[in-house]
Image (cartoon, rainbow, N blue to C red; front, side, top):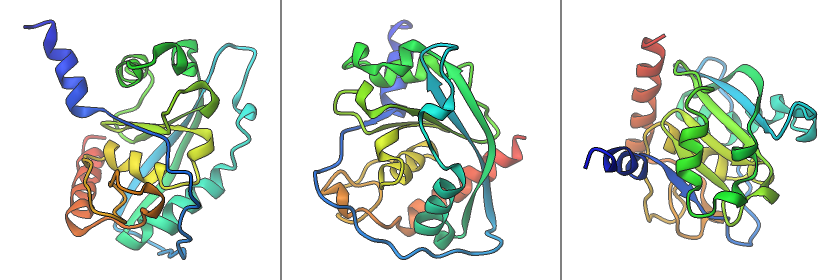
Length: 205
């Protein structure tokens, strides 16, 4: 039974999310606030297969990405995602999740245990082409998002999981699994949960 407990805990706290429906995402009018009351640092962590690679292979404009997150999803809820560090992690096991089909969440949990920082949100990025039917994975204070889905609702969905949210079946909600291309809003309870989790993270610094 003791051997089963870690596996059960991983299954209860990790969310592997399938690829979005093949439809255009909604346009969301950005809303920005100057000084949101709940602020959370985020590290963007690029997973590469060897020391011969670096983050340039992803061609991600980090400032634009944080602007997308804040303007479309978080600032409107008085939450601010702020840039912490931009890092590279060499990990061939995590880089190519196709080799771990069916165990992606467990691999993500295990392979990031020593590289994530507990005083912030940690977003890991891997190539979409190196997964099978996975757009992202959410785990306590950690989110894995495939590069093709960074600028879609996959990002706030997985961040939601990383901040304590579960799936729901309400169409249009960020955490829904129903017609995910229509996702755009968090509800009041979800916002409170995220804000409380952010407060807890910041108080543990």
